[in-house]
Length: 182
Image (cartoon, rainbow, N blue to C red):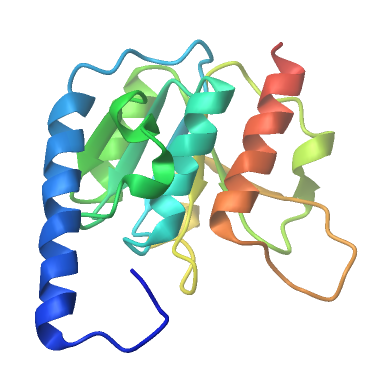
């Protein structure tokens, strides 16, 4: 959304309607998306429906992500994905349980990325069928990790900032997975 001046209510509604049309069109096209060449899957758990979701699709397409699962994420503007939303298969879930059950049944091992975890991404030997859960930008994951078989990983950081932008963190994970499975 343009931010040079404050938009009127009518302009905001018009922008939202345009975004919703783009989302609906791209979501319809997404039904024909072929899985990426890698076996990694990303699970976006209650992320804000803003810029980051589309950026994760863009990086996912670049790194050959197999699928991206969206947990209770409202419509988002697909424009920042530069067309990747129609190329990377998206699976939509109302809650984490249904996603978890589906991917466990398919043989996936789950990982969350959170600051402060004892194990680091770069020191972990990832299985080929890895599912990476990315939590909400402010609130983290929406579930109690102890109720699931999920390994917690962190991305090594050396500055004072405690976390990374979720789309940047997802891209780092995609790179590390691709490094381990060229």
